[in-house]
Image: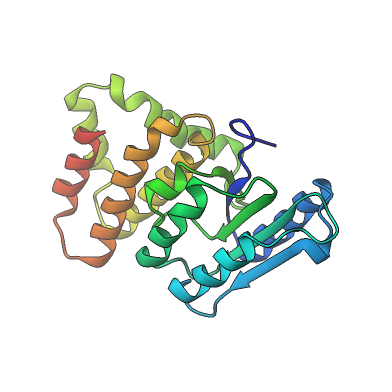
Length: 216
């Protein structure tokens, strides 16, 4: 399972227990012994301290296997500072290392991090039919006229809960599309910013949603 070349950096999203099980199953298939797998985690959002520990483990040599793996378990997310500190490692990862970052969603993950990883999305609640519906909305937006975009904004800005749920589904669909189209990173960023604005402020829902759909 590779995206481009020998890319060995993965962002695995979904319920944390599920992502951890998936990561260990995947590493077993890669024939990486448990002794060569290190898990770095934090009770709070992963910060600089955990990234420093992560970076130390990255450059150790494997003991028993041809490769080693370092899992960064980010149950409650990563701070922006931590993500910026991760960039250098992700830009030039050691050739004998598999990196797996486990996180519930890409909602607050920087596009620069996303673009440097293979995205694996695990989601029990969304069926293929539901996912395809939201993927189609995203991929068809560029071909929709202004009137259609404004109608879409109107339909999903009736209340905060409706808007947030719709945006959450679009973000999940965009994560899936990113597997094959890294050019969607700006769209993901815009969706994330809109979600955070609606969730954390008393903004005008209709105006914000109209701006979103006219900008994609």
